[in-house]
Image 1 (tube, rainbow, N blue to C red):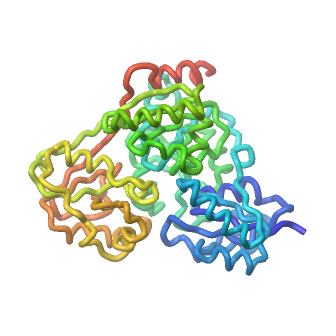
Image 2: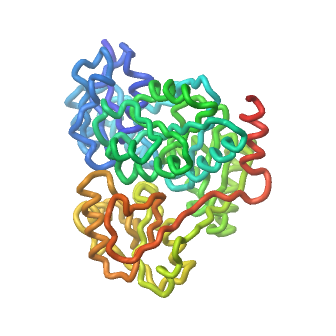
Image 3: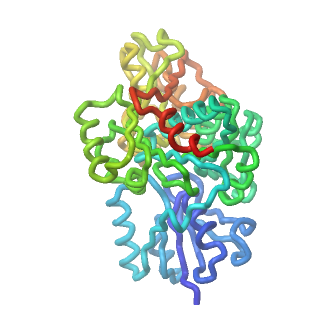
Length: 440
């Protein structure tokens, strides 16, 4: 009899683990997924079109709040933990909950879930959400393009809509983004790549995705999500570390895995961090991965119109995932507001409505800043209404995209842009020339 399996996830790693390890594996029967972190992804099914011959009716997805009941209801033998940016304590509390029911608790590692690429592949991961993966990936892409290489991005999954339709997604234009009805979170990842004239793939079936990407790439660039480890076997792993959260690199799953596996570690945000925190981070790297090459970098900030900030009472909007499950109290928008002489950063919480108000309850560390939550039409509507209600002079937009393409901001606003700038040597170009480019 096959072992009965439940996979705990958040519509990303869980589906990938199923596809690569369980889908055609007759030793196991996956009876359910549970979901958390991302709103509005429960009460769906993993579709039969993706689930394979063993799952003619697909697989139901439930909320993680029902975990213990589901284990008993489905007579589950094994529970697989499959999502990211979680404290080690949280993972072990989940394990204790599962073990108390009598079931086994499993974590699948890189060997069981990584897919081999036929083209050279560079993976960019991080120790926490919001460390600076995407700006690092874009810098790498610029370098590779300079040497005449065709670069195709593959982005960690964000399948919030119809999973069967989203099996393989290709984004090369803004029209592609509109056609796929992308959320704010998806736009934040895809638009900056499209702005560079490059292609990004995403979706659900990462085996099918890489076969498509290989057709138009010299080098594939894996742009990780949260702090998950790569879905693909890599030629070079670059992990971005964040001294603003010094110590977290050894406290979060699977960020510590990325730190230990890394060939290159980029210590980002040097211009915003305290010396003592940089020291803590460097010491932790020395303990667990002393052979990694270190690159130091600033996350440099540019404001479109500083006059919109100076001496003004401002509302600051930041990247949603960085503030929520990333646990940051601020981001680039907040830094820009302070550096450019804002009179006050207005506390958004008293004016939050609907799903935005619920987000503050779920993530109390989000502080006074507004996370750009837009996983659903309702969240986008609530975000727009919240902004309209806040009594401020102007708005500082610290998200990676022009959010006014999605919502209306009735007050004066300015965008904050940021990019990676290495400090001294070695830098990314030197590393790439000695590794991936040298082999081509």
